[in-house]
Figure (cartoon, rainbow, N blue to C red):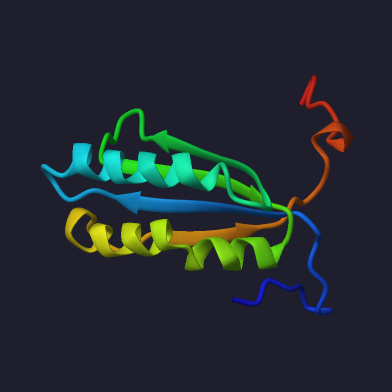
Length: 118
């Protein structure tokens, strides 16, 4: 995994979203597997936060919001036994493998002008 911009630089803090959809009838099993990943991941060195969400109108949809001190911490996380075990379990529980999207902030929320009167 190489998370750099066009100039080869990477912000020190890395943010990502993971998305996975349960197979019909396997929502509870996937939730249980994801909950175990969350529990163990929150104790990993380099983890800033790791939160799990479920689609309000799509109960089979799960979203992970995560932040890491750096790309190396995320790379190490993906190699841990609990994550590898989850990937194996997800083959039978999910419609497709977990989709991970690394994101960069565009601008600080404090610098966005108000849309009053717009």
